[in-house]
Length: 323
Image (cartoon, rainbow, N blue to C red):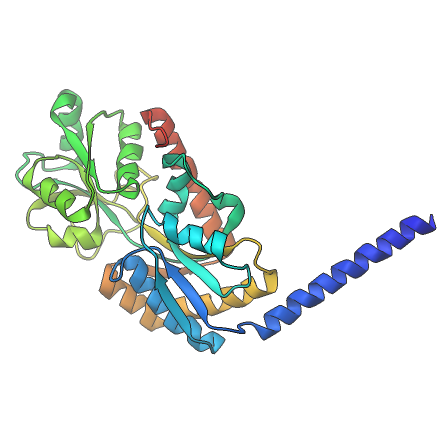
């Protein structure tokens, strides 16, 4: 009996000691410069958001925050750096696209990390729009006309993508519509957009930023989001057309999952203050056509889970295997 009581008392003592240590760490945080890994090239939406967030959070945390660009392999290089080479002390975090987090386990079989076990997304911050487009020279004036033409002559049409994050909205929509088209992969966004505009491919999703560069040479059929874009008020949303699963590119702040809870809370609070600043929202829209809005950890986790399910369903039904 006394041994059982002793074990219980010891366990309680260890728990208290552990919690005390976590609180002490949080009180002294940050104890050195903070880094936000931007797993994308300078000037990209990910990079721009990371620098905006670093500026706002640095003021709240009273610490310099450095943005470190580590692009490559659909953001995998930056994610691996945070998970495998950075201690879980809150001094290294990563600004990541939710679609990349959802798609890496689906599209790659050589992953050396487990994103669901190693990483936690603590703050959603912004979402853009994807626009389904085709060449302006095509005779199909509406989304319905385009779909009807593809069903009538499926071998005549092809769709393009410059990355899995751009391909999977097409796959999701094609699965819902029962469409089949040849996939044409591209290594970069510019040649992809130019071929779409010239008619070498007939279907493709563009970010609103990319769409703006070819808007006079393509026709827009539908756009993601709850509301129409002020830039393209005549383009219906996918929701209006009855397709709820098509979402735009979303961005969030993530940490190693084993970061102490009090430090996570402190970072979340600083991120919330930065994202909710009016200047942040204005800059996000002006620089990258992004709608900035703070989402807490639970909300962004639900959004990520929904994307994972939709993309897994699309991959299974369209026969897409990890490579």
